[in-house]
Length: 312
Ligand code: NAD
Ligand code: UDP
Image (tube, rainbow, N blue to C red):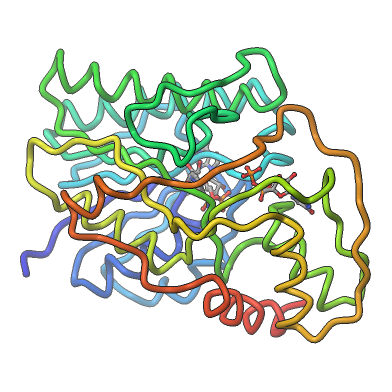
């Protein structure tokens, strides 16, 4: 296999660190760029001994110059509490980050992949979600800094492609979980596991009937790398996620069962604009990438619980 030089923005985060690891495993040179807002050096410290790995502190809202063959643009806080902490910065990260990475890709003729999200569908009226659904997003709600930022990033990607022939790929990631999620990241899988392991109350927001479809990190990365390597004229957007759909109450009960915890479930107010349902239609990924997830929720949760047992 040809060794490629690859830039991963947001490479010290949950998904980015696994991606750096996998790309190195495949024999590539990897440059990891991160400002450590939600990521941590700890996630990639074990890679620093590898001479084909480089770690750079940089913020994607500022231009960055490097010679690489491919760029995976993952830099952006992904958890609602973190992306709502400084909403203006979240928009800047998505939009200026996309402009900077697309400008770089244009100049050096690199291929560039955007980590987009199922949040572009907002609180969806079409279920399961197909890529041709335009979405149902509140442009002024608490999630809009993330949703609209990611939507503009998609707009920038397709227009750099049309106008400047930049080689692009857009992946729409559905809720992904696994080892290296930050224990206080605030996302539901990490929250429930940490609460169960510590014997704290399991916090369900709302009545727990809202649904999500959870994808294990290894499956997600397989889909992401397949997309980067897919035929030149397939640019996406393509949904990558596990169609297994669960209510938050079902998730809480499964976590309690798998941890053997005696934590009790408590109900807290549902945050504004929290999507009521979410499930990917993955026919396009099946057809174009020959991809489908292999790891069911229970199996992925067991691996994730083992990880958290060692750190909390
Ligand atoms: P994460 O928060 O663990 O990782 C994001 C990384 O980006 C962190 O290391 C953070 O420090 C870095 N970052 C944030 N702002 C930056 C900036 N301005 N400059 C440089 N680095 C910056 O989240 P994750 O789950 O690994 O998500 C990675 C990407 O995938 C994000 O773009 C996210 O929107 C997207 N995504 C993730 C999911 C999921 O379920 N995990 C779902 C949909 C989309
Ligand atoms: N959620 C919950 N308890 C928590 C954290 C989240 O019930 O401690 C709910 C949240 O309201 C949402 C779902 O779990 O309905 C998924 O939340 P997460 O923040 O993981 O992702 P997103 O809402 O962005 O899909």
